[in-house]
Amino acid sequence: MRIGVFDSGFGGLTIFQALAARLPDYDYLYLGDNARTPYGNRSFETIYRFTREGVDFLFSRGCKLIIIACNTASAKALRAIQQNVLPTQYPGRNVLGIIRPSVEELAKQSKTRVVALWGTEGTVKSDSFALELAKSAPQIRLFQRACPMLVPLVEAGELAGGGTDFFINRYWSETHALHPGIDTLLLACTHYPLLYARIRALVPPEVNILIQGNFVAPSLADYLTRHPEIDSDLTRDGSRAFFTTDRTEGFDKLAEAFLGHSVISEKITL
Ligand code: DGL
Image (cartoon, rainbow, N blue to C red; front, side, top):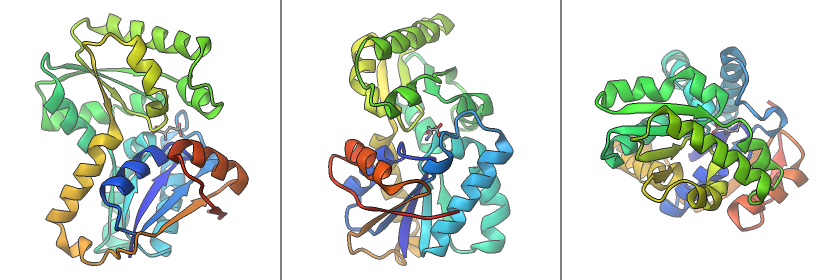
């Protein structure tokens, strides 16, 4: 059985890349719902339905464990799937998101206990990170800023240049205005690591910038150690398969930009 990685499109490849680098022997299936991306500003009901369909597909292809490598889907659909779907339809299998490890890392890294995140409208409006933080690290204050221009900039290949810098500067000054003591900024959207070089150059050096792949991968490794009943069913032939709900040519081209090596995907319908 494999590890499934689900995202609304390409962005989850940044998480997939980190998982495959940290745990290279496992077999992975990646599904990008490119036909319906972006999820960022869609309603709860829609994101839940789309994510549920993606999860059903990955389970039908033999996944034992699925990582929802999309902040918006983790924020809006994960809990409902874990509570309502897994126990009745997929007992013994699991679906994990990327919010809990993110929140744990924020609590670990911040000295001032004042942190910020950048994400999509959907992630910010769901307040899921703040709710998770309130449970596990209530001493931390979180300020959130939706950055709706950053995903389209990445998808258009605008990873540097005046337009990109303009929006990063604007989002940072609006974030800093929320609280001057922010010492840690979480990039809580799968696309933003591709803008890391410009974000790092424009956000003051004393602010620590967190990229999710760096800690989601060790967190999965830790999970597998603690859950031998899942780990023992996972096969380890180092295989990777990529599925997309849209044209494969487009997926393969952008996936290569994300991963740095060529990819041959298969188109599926959810
Ligand atoms: N994958 C999404 C996220 O991490 C960003 C792209 C989208 O809006 O679908 O929130």
